[in-house]
Length: 89
Image 1: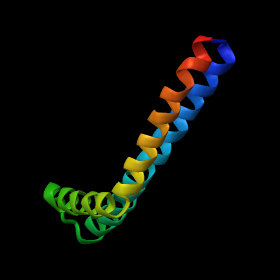
Image 2: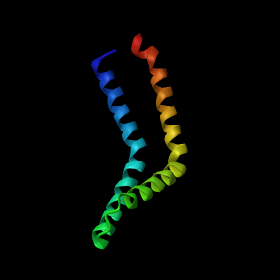
Image 3: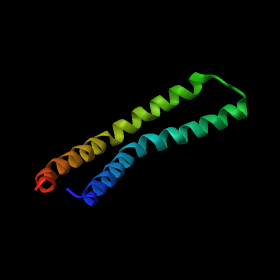
């Protein structure tokens, strides 16, 4: 096991983590921005007005892309376990 292989594993881990978190984070970012603009325009400062749409948006994103996210996580985990003999020997 060399420092290059550890760096490659770490880089791939961060890439997979970014890919898996991107749909949820981008959805909450877009909804938060739209809700913030709406709250500024109407001067309604109700916290539940921001929370409930984000919660529903994340639920929809998980329903739509959850299968893909789970498949990516399982594939990456299998790749890590398949690399164990190569890294040890």
